[in-house]
Length: 204
Image (tube, rainbow, N blue to C red; front, top):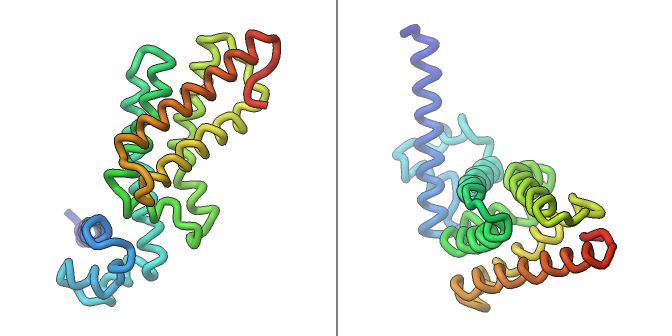
């Protein structure tokens, strides 16, 4: 192994250790504890070493948000395995809210309004794309013509976000929030099917 290859691998390993420590601090202590000094102490490095990999806390938080979106995407992809199109949509609803309840601090940084909007949008895109694919499959299975598929997807995503927020804020328990999310999506999808039967286009 060449010296440059070894150094690149060591650098990648160091970055990974920093991210793992940051994730542990975030999950167990919350966003407020997520400082460069705290992370450096957790991995037994000096703060300058952490700064070699992340420009500051904001860069670290964006990386953790991206990690959260990847975790959520994994959950969504498991839902794709469900053969029934309606059950697939219900499972996505349930998994979204479950994720928010089980990873509250990660979910918080994923949706932090203070973070760069473009970065947050890019991080969420893969999971939103899976939801859009599921919605397209559902509409084809029920002969429902979507007036605006992107808008329809935004309606579903916004609904799940709102209900997950109820759980995140402690307004309702996560189990009930998951049930509410399934009910909400079922009602929306039924409404779109009814519009299609009456000769209209759904999601307008």
